[in-house]
Amino acid sequence: MSAYAYSDAPARPGWITRTLNWLDERGPLSWIVVMVGSFIFAGPLGLVVLGFILITGRFGRGCRAARERHQARFGACGPRMHFHARRMTGNAAFDTYKAETLARLEREQDDFEAFLRRLREARDKAEFDQYMDERARAAAAPADETELDDEGGAPSPERTDPPRPGAY
Image 1: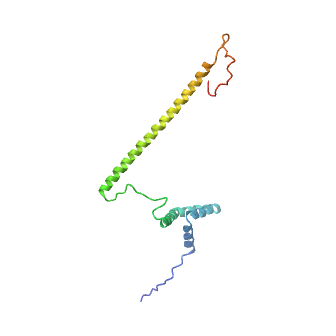
Image 2 (image 1 turned 120 degrees about the vertical axis):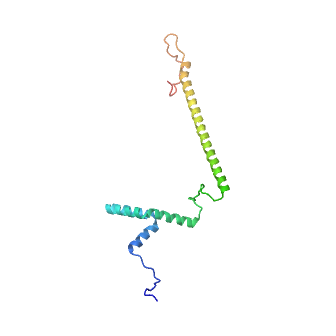
Image 3 (image 1 turned 90 degrees about the horizontal axis):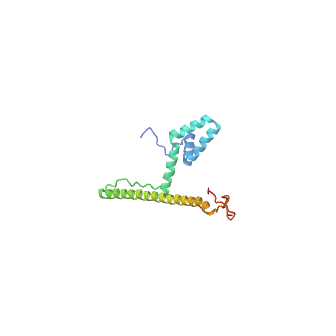
């Protein structure tokens, strides 16, 4: 027999450890509330709390715990399913095929983006050419439509429509 006795009862942590665990269970938002509250009531204490949070990595731990809970609930599926396309599988033939396919897809994506860029440039050029044609027609229209008098060169009173906006 040993001089040490084995006890089934776990040691009860102190109030500080229980408080930290309680805040960790509620996530990073609880730490933000504690930090803001400590800044409001005692400024230097807020800096101490901020330093404690950064040194102990409390934000990362809460995010990690939330991610683990999410994965435990939904498995690998979900909004943040991680897929590593560049990871080698060990099968040389498949890895070669995968590398060639990914390279081909990247080339096709680059070609498609270049096509879209040329398409946008052509549309912009067509719109600009149409604008310049309309502007040239508007500038030429008043000179054609105005009929000058024989005496003074003033326009005849037959023209009643107001000039178009933007016409010079």
